[in-house]
Length: 190
Ligand code: GAR
Image 1 (cartoon, helix red, strand yellow):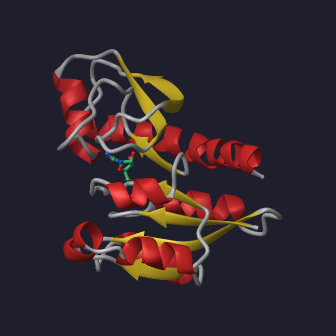
Image 2 (image 1 turned 60 degrees about the vertical axis):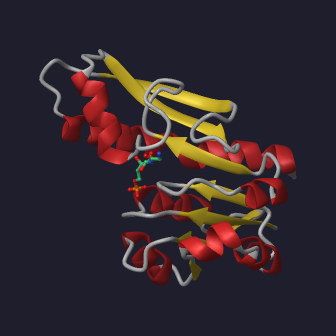
């Protein structure tokens, strides 16, 4: 069994879709939900699914090896960032080479980097007058949103679309593709 940890800072709708997708899977188990926020919606999803959780603070995450130690002692094989907003420290990247992936709500390399998350991304895309946006699933390296791209999908933007409407389109794309892209990557690992 490959054991996954999902890191999330917010509502956790992607985490919920991934949990649902792998429920009862023969080779993959969602084993741990990690969050930097005590009140993140994703923790309610973890509780409803009887999943272990780990809450991390900045000091632990950036100045100790606690997080890596916790992942290793839980036997985690692969890490999925699903709306996790902190930069991943080098010790974690080195502990899981090519085994940490992220989803970004735009077509990287555009609209990525520090400060580009959630609605900030959609507001910037609409303000620039783009006619399409999309999602990018990529490996995580030491720089925000710069690891090798694994998968992208696009959606059109209508002239009347608000950032909220675009956010809904992007969430729908994420929910449709993220679980199966993860499954494809894991199939190559087994
Ligand atoms: C998702 O749209 C994800 O792409 C984005 O946060 C949202 C989380 O939604 N991630 C980033 O912006 C990372 N830079 P969710 O909590 O409902 O899954």
